[in-house]
Amino acid sequence: MPRTLGQPRPDSAAYMLRAAAGQAGRAYKQVMLDLLDVRPGQTVLDVGCGPGTDLQSLADRAGPDGTVIGVDHDPAMLARARGRVASLPTVGIREADVHALPVDPETVDRAKVDRVLMHVADPSAVLAQLRRVVRPGGRVALAEPDWDTLVVDADDLETSRAFTRFTTSQVVRNSAIGRGLPRLAEQAGFAVETVRTTAPVFRDVDEADHVLGLGRNMRKAIDGGHIDEARGLRWFTSLAQGPFFATFTLVTVACTR
Image 1 (spheres, one colour):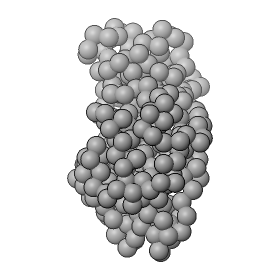
Image 2 (cartoon, rainbow, N blue to C red):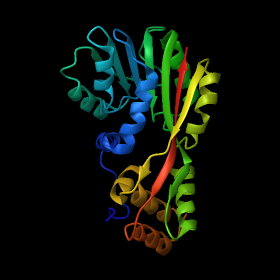
Image 3 (cartoon, rainbow, N blue to C red):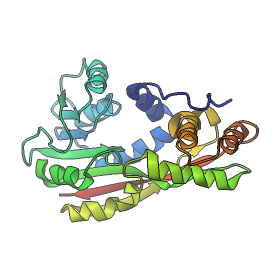
């Protein structure tokens, strides 16, 4: 059964760790890391590293002669990250706004930004910061969802569509950032080499509720007058009463400086 309608999301670090550990999270992250092509001895930057989900993998690829830098603005996230990499001497954690990266110009060989631009005030400014710190010839990997593509199967199709519209207009700051990644990367001065899309598939309603916020965001939509309460409750309850399916498109871009 899905969680209670309106139940708050767990703390952000726990949410991100669980989402990354799921099958959908593992699949696209593997694609992203492969495209990033980290080599031994390189300096790697994880922009918006959160609780340090990917720092171990990056450190493994950079090897004992490499350096990995994780940057995030959230002290609670960084505390979790530091705990995860305490035994990794090649990994450093820095607290900063990603609009002002605490990294010297042209000192980074590889950089990744994973589901961060959808939250920031100015995605173009973050990409300009990336171009400043990445060496000529360096490689950058970006991954962001396009929330306009969120689909949740239900007999009440119109409420599913209303839920997606609410998500894109009220919940996610830059909800269509995924489709804009190639354009924004080129405008920032990067050469786009690869663009890939993946569509995570959710067949377990509890997992979808956790990752996609089905219950908590429907509660917000009802409270805000965007969806009728009786209609929203029927829709949410129906999701656990038969086979479940939901998906969205995630765009991954690999580019060079």
